[in-house]
Length: 293
Length: 302
Image 1 (cartoon, rainbow over the protein chains, first blue to last red):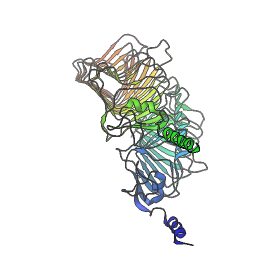
Image 2 (cartoon, rainbow over the protein chains, first blue to last red):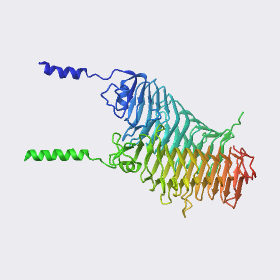
Image 3 (cartoon, rainbow over the protein chains, first blue to last red):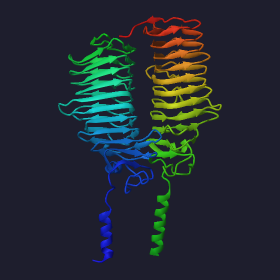
Image 4 (spheres, rainbow over the protein chains, first blue to last red):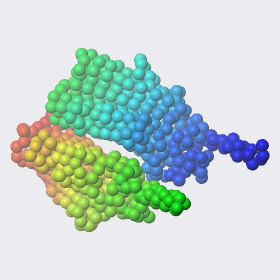
């Protein structure tokens, strides 16, 4: 074999993937054959995630679409406020988290479905935090079949989802903990649907605007605590079935057909005696109440 | 002959490939250095919102890349129109409206823009002909429009206003549904909206259901909050230093955790609407007005 024939083979053999780094970057002018450094960024999140160390950071440098991705180890993916970093998938999931034992933070992303069914799917992680995220137009905005772990959604909005804005439905007998703080669930068919999980919701807005929709749906095994929130314009404001318990404090439930609806004997919607349940068509009575102390 | 045919084919392919394809991009862009003859892509942005709206596919995104004025626009498809916080993306019309939601059954997100009227009538206008449309209007400054900062007249509409400053407009935000079908209500939710220095702050008209939390409305020559025939709930509001704090005419208003202070008249209710007038949830601050006025109904939280 001549050197002419060997050299291309050698060059291909040595065109190895980028060396893993503590911080990788994507940019509108990047390329996925780059090492994903700040001066040679990649073009898509998937490439930058493959190139980053566990517990590292992936940063979007400027405004663009950066493609769907799957996470399998601890990472923080960030778009700073100045950057509109979007994912507009046509099918599947925008983001899939299947990272047993990992800690994942996603911040500042704009997920806009162009046919895809799920915004963020949490299959497995120690914790997943969604911060300042916009999710719109999926069947489920956030879907959690994981059987353990901690989900945090902060300062975000999830809108226009055909099934649920957030669905926490551990597939088998599992138990997930979740927190929603300053989250707006707008125009979804169900704002949040909670199964076997303990979820705390503060300073959030459920606004369904749909004659058949539900603000908060609690299924068997759910324990949902709601504080300082608004639940508006639904067919059901709060819907509790099975053995679920929903507790409301300093919360306004208004403009719903059925404000507080329990459909099983064991289901409970409990008041902390400081709510405003006003201007609903029916079901404005709590199961019981607990005094503030 | 074959060579000529091949060359012509290659040339044709090259030319067609180079032509911008309008209306097929999920994301289009505008920039101060853009041109409306561009395809509105990230690398070849357009100059005005109107061109980028034309070029984007339904349910896509239009993004402003840098600070500039981007021209009035009529939105006739579902779309997200976004300027990130580092970008001052302005619309400064001298007549008409800055943004018109001009179609029915569309879903629009508008975020991060600055709208300033130089004689123009309305900031964001949803006319009565736009039926069953929804819009989120977020993180914006809307100032100096002669008629209204936000005016929603379309029946069966759904509006969500969040983190807005509305200053020196005729009316800050106005919701009504002029329709003969009382089932076609327009619903609006306001969160953290500040309205200052106009004729009326928040105005609610017939066939509308409005819910406002953390609303601040001050320094209006008529009313901070004016409910004329609609249904309104105010939670954690401030209506101060207006002529009327809350002016309620043939309407139902429920007020909780709200401060009505420093107005000429705190509460004014006239006419009959159901039996409720202005309802208090017994947790408001009604004081320090020249005339406080009274709530018609008192209820409590539970």
